[in-house]
Amino acid sequence: MLTGTHRFPARGLPSWPNLLILVSHMILAAVTPSLAIWAIWLARSSRFAEHRRVVRYAWPIWMYVSITGVVVYLMLYHWPVAHSLT
Image (cartoon, rainbow, N blue to C red; front, side, top):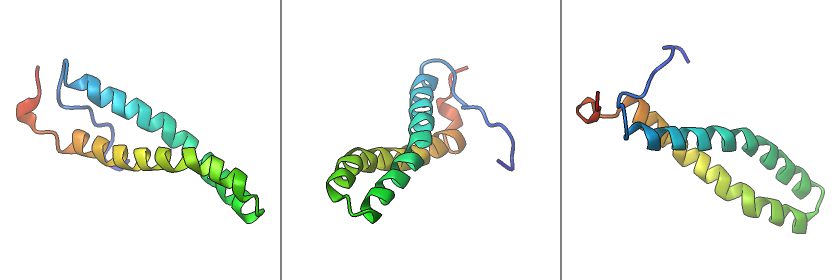
């Protein structure tokens, strides 16, 4: 955020996995807070059966978003320049 826009250093085929991971990460990251708030609300309302049904999907999505956030960071800032295809 403080350093401006960064582009993926590789061109061609290596940029496709980055784009797929980035897009899936962004879409699911937008959904995760709603699922988390809903799950917390259900648990606090003692609606544990419904809470378990929501968390069954929310937890894996949250973990995917957490892991892909780190992967996107590593691919964007630490991708070896030697791998870039120009």
